[in-house]
Amino acid sequence: MKTKQNKRKTIALLAHDGKKALLAAFVRDHRSRLRCFNLIGTGNTGLLVQSAGLEITMKLSGPLGGDAQIASEVIAGRCDAVIFLRDPLVSHPHDPDIAMLMRNCDVHNVPLCTNVATAELILKGIR
Ligand SMILES: O=C(CO)COP(=O)(O)O
Image 1 (tube, rainbow, N blue to C red):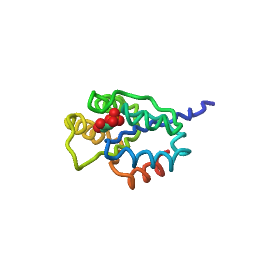
Image 2 (image 1 turned 30 degrees about the vertical axis):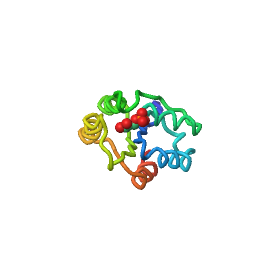
Image 3 (image 1 turned 135 degrees about the vertical axis):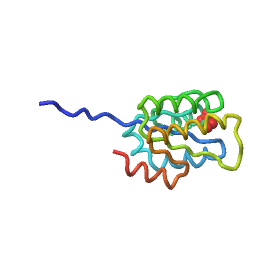
């Protein structure tokens, strides 16, 4: 009889500089739950998650193409949810990449959240 493989899901974590403290607190509060997933993230966000004691695959920093790399994981079907604490109060040099990532989450029906309240719902809901 075939056994169903219990494949870990992948969550992407990204935070703009103005939201990094919030992401650090989120990671601290949900460390044990986050350990159940493969984590990927943009460069500086990844370093922050790593310094909280979690394993994470780091892509490039956002402005250098990291958002685009995360989008490519979404498009390839290798990312199951995106937690993106973006700062809506400042503009970013890579705004086109940010829009592209968000658009592709919608195109591929991948859960995307941009604030902590919804990030908590995603963590509760994803199996
Ligand atoms: O710019 C980002 C997301 O758009 C995040 O990039 P860093 O994690 O490298 O700061």
